[in-house]
Image (cartoon, rainbow, N blue to C red; front, side):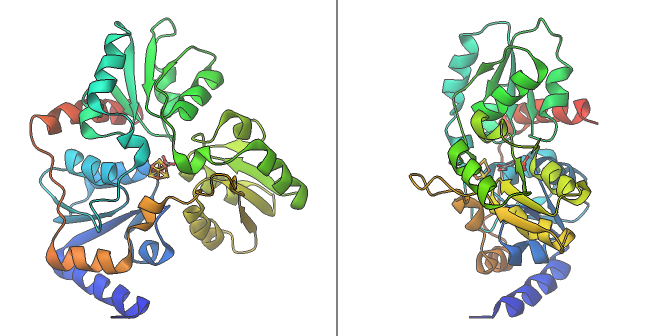
Length: 310
Ligand code: 13P
Ligand code: SF4
């Protein structure tokens, strides 16, 4: 077995040898973020995957992210450290059920959160991420009915921000759903002066207490801009690594979990270990493939999203 730094050196050497880039989501482990070429939120990583000219994209994230990278740049080899690192939110919205949801609301525009399977995306008109959801929905005429899935908290947040009705699929992210208002209030009492900031996948009762709501990237940027010295962060705590790196003098407190549901860490993101990252590069496996006609069908709503959020 190699040490962490030994493995990191090997990964960096392989990266050069293979003409590979490593893309990693902010929720992955610090030792993964350290060897990545690009660390970002879902939107930044999708954009990066589309434009990289490396032969191989190694994606440390969850399955729908690797799949989206392949859809956006099919001529590249896309590898993932663990192809079983799925997103339970995405998996809670099977394509047949989403298609049925759509049939129940004929005439509605169907928007899917990027946290969905390619097959479910293919059943929709436009995708969005938490970074561009508001701007995408703003571009839909006000009298046009909208169905949105799978994340009900993000959908509810958009509906309230824009003052319009959105018909919601009832999915949620177990990581963000675990935060509760009473726990946030306790944390605020324990850390007077610390600002509560939250991801829109959190429940409405948590968002109502937060002084700032935004995607992972927006939260990160906000902590740099805000004059506050301390933050209670209600999103997956992997982001604290980059927040602390960018603002070494500030204090970042992971929002407390609901102890009846103590799961505010995304275990799927943490399945991307350094060992598995090294092994997937060495063996060029697991490789992510998306067959036609699924690839083209899922590309359409993703492309529409990128065009609408240029
Ligand atoms: P963003 O990367 O858009 O903030 O989404 C959060 C998330 O849960 C990713 O799986
Ligand atoms: Fe899915 Fe939530 Fe994990 Fe993101 S944090 S990958 S939405 S389970």
